[in-house]
Image 1 (spheres, one colour):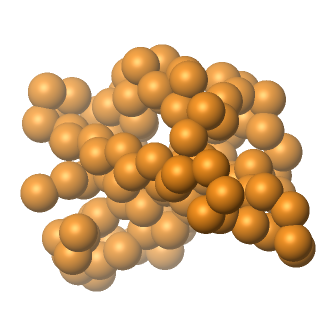
Image 2 (tube, one colour):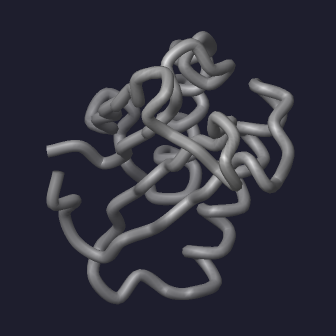
Image 3 (cartoon, helix red, strand yellow):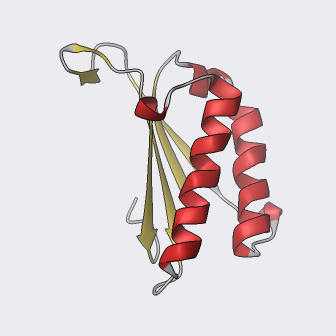
Length: 110
């Protein structure tokens, strides 16, 4: 079961930079969650062109969902979400309005 699920429009910068982002997500898992990098599973879902819109225009946003242990402290949750947002902005050049990060307690239902 995936620890991270990344949902992006096909052809979008985050999809083109998938390898670098995967490495960054694994690094974050090691640093902030104590997870072994080899155990951090990342799943990517591509949204076909013409199927994702924001305010009537093709979406440029990426959604990253991360599972954490039940009861994960809020301050660490904020640190984790900030690290993921910073990674995305650094690698893809996206704005804060183009990256959505959600942290879910327990296993991802995907």
